[in-house]
Length: 77
View 1: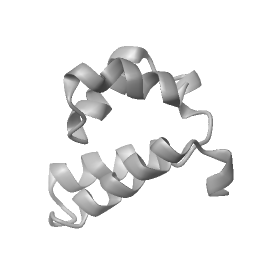
View 2 (view 1 turned 90 degrees about the vertical axis):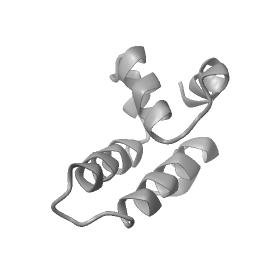
View 3 (view 1 turned 45 degrees about the vertical axis):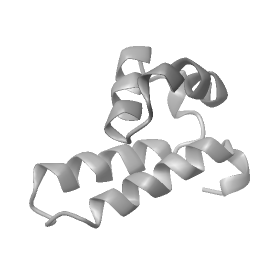
């Protein structure tokens, strides 16, 4: 996947998920969660099929402040 096809904010969130995963043992639920998020965020059109509630949950897991959800989500879709 070429990063040019993915919005910059999505690349940053994907990288953050990958970095967060590195903080956990590979068998932990947290590692699996962040790896799953990173995998989803690696797809250029992922926000076309993810329900908004799930997207907001991913943003929350990645530490995005809730008052920024609408703004960040708007950049992703």
